[in-house]
Amino acid sequence: MNQEAVLAEFRSSGALLEGHFKLSSGRHSGHYLQCARVLMNPARAARIAEAVVAAIPAGVREQVDVVVSPAMGGIIIGHEVGRALGKDALFLERPEGTFHLRRGFALEKGARVLMVEDVVTTGLSSREAIAAVAREGGEVIAECAIIDRSCGSVDLGVPFYPLLAIDFPTYDEGSIPEALAAVPVTKPGSRKE
Image (cartoon, rainbow, N blue to C red; front, side):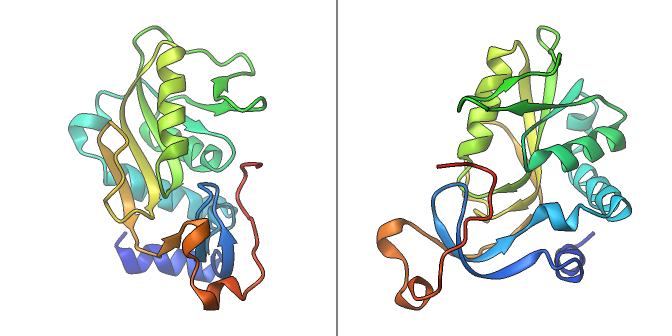
């Protein structure tokens, strides 16, 4: 699945939004990729997950013991990546602000984990999730995602394999362009502030 095919999946599902968005990272953007919408169709979610897995080097895929993703955004794609790899898929939650495993999920000590995200912008959630896996006894050997909004600049501390790297500009609170600031802000992500 090439870049245009991935974007076509987002466009056809109404998942590529334009407006003024406050992202989970706290940054602002004129574009938002609503992965829940693109993944709401199981067949499309499976196609995207298979493409994500195909973008991971075979040597890395062979080492994976279990797939872990952060809630909320990573749950569906994490589950589908787990299915494509034939591995269990767990997810981390942070009801009190810090990621941890719940619902009876547990990692075997030393489990080699593939972290799966929907979209990575600054990498903050990913780094928090990677730290949580270490606290739970596992080791994240790599991360994959549908979209890398950093366009290759993010450092997660582990190898990162996004399906698509895209450069939609983002802005901190003090540098929002006048035209974007004039548009009412929407906060579509799952993180509360």
